[in-house]
Length: 327
Image 1 (tube, rainbow, N blue to C red):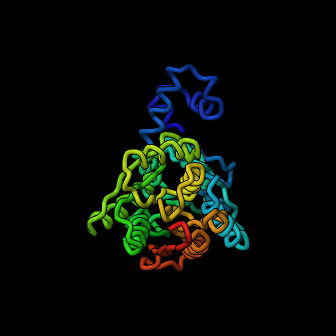
Image 2: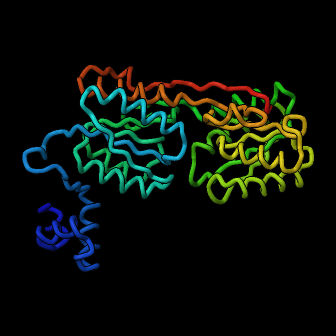
Image 3: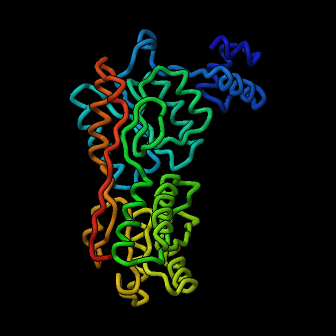
């Protein structure tokens, strides 16, 4: 804290006040203090007194959303395997926002966590700098294909797209579309699109891309589906970025009286609980939600116990296609 105060040209007590009550510090001083904090990579320690130099029993986890059941399954499994070892989860929701993730990383690191779990490989430069200066064990989950910051447990999203492309082509569908939430919000959806488009076009097919401007809103989804079918009368199949978007497509097809599969095939991603009960049941890609949580716990406990080898720090769990009547 003394270095921050010196660089910001304020007293240590002013830095302390800013960290506890930033609204009570003038905007000019607050800006200088925050600039100094960023430059030095300073992290205020939330742990008190004698605990400040030791690890807490907290494992931080940052997910992009808490509304999808597959992230919930990962969190539940992770907590179930870490609890007997005395660890507790501290969960943050980044809302697909790198700046929000950065705030959460700062906050969680201030607790001297025993470990930190992040979703995917995309992080802000400041986040990467903070993590590089920390000796906290880090696991990046729900993705695979890059080196990562430390440990990695996940699967390839490009492979997800390739599986659906292979399925569509085997069914005779050549004219397809990819309907997605915004790639700016969900870059892993973009990876699924890239794998899907690559295999479809390599086989002589075509793929039209449409992005939703908001979140997975069924009304906006229906509007885009109507536009797609109007603009591309030969469209045969739609691969959706997630099951919620795919549900919106199914509902719009039913409203328009378009027979699913005969007029338009539909596939999603996630294999959420409702997908087996839609009319017709939805084809989807199943991510290894529970397995991810299980292996993250195993990996973290091994690292904290000093028994994890370098060969055990990266794990691709793969995915599977669940083919149902919607395709």
